[in-house]
Length: 302
Image 1 (cartoon, helix red, strand yellow):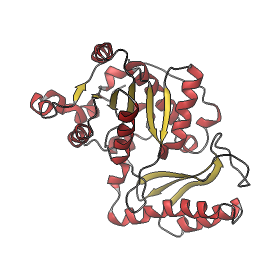
Image 2: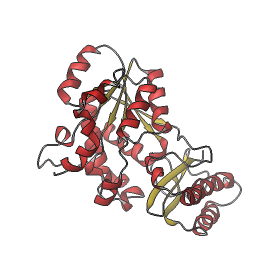
Image 3: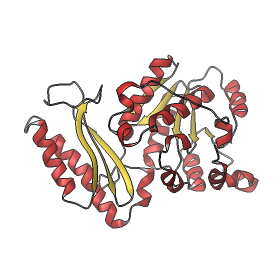
């Protein structure tokens, strides 16, 4: 797995003690051995964990805030995981504003940052497969084959290393939260998964690390996604499910947006529904490309 070159661009600052010292209030560790030492010092405390790929925004910071409220000690990880990218160009384009991330974590009073290199996380020739059932093949799984194998692979590794009491994930990646819960249940892991509400820009756009790639014009176009989801929410019990989806799709397709999917599903199974009363929790989910940037969003309807 030859990802050391690109990863080196994002962690070169770790070789510079002067930069590290400027973030002296935030403890930064980079190896599993260091984490074991840290866990020994935190024995008996509840540990909250926020795994990220960096390019932090207020959505990530809200997870850290909730973790700090509910746990004795909070760990954030930054690791751009190569195994969950099925497009090498997407991996290369993923933003890595390391210094800005460190400043945000320090300002958020995060207790510890775990920031490993690729060769710290993966052995040469390592393989992984997890039976995720239908979750792996619908919606995001259909458009990003292998993505959730990479997600479960790295999250399992991080859980083993950090040994959290609770782990926090944003609702914006609704299907990902379901996949991680499935893994935790299957492997009987001793961690509680907490799904936290999506944090949005003032104009309604769901916060995402990928938003930095949007031009001003594309940002305005991207607002159509949340508008379409809200239109579906307003249609609950007023129009049929099929008509609500049809109107929302028309709204998106009237713009210069490449729609991948827009669905209303059972929140527990991700299976399509045909009636508003068919499930206790309904979710509308959308994925689309605005320019070259792929965005996802969702709204819980009930």
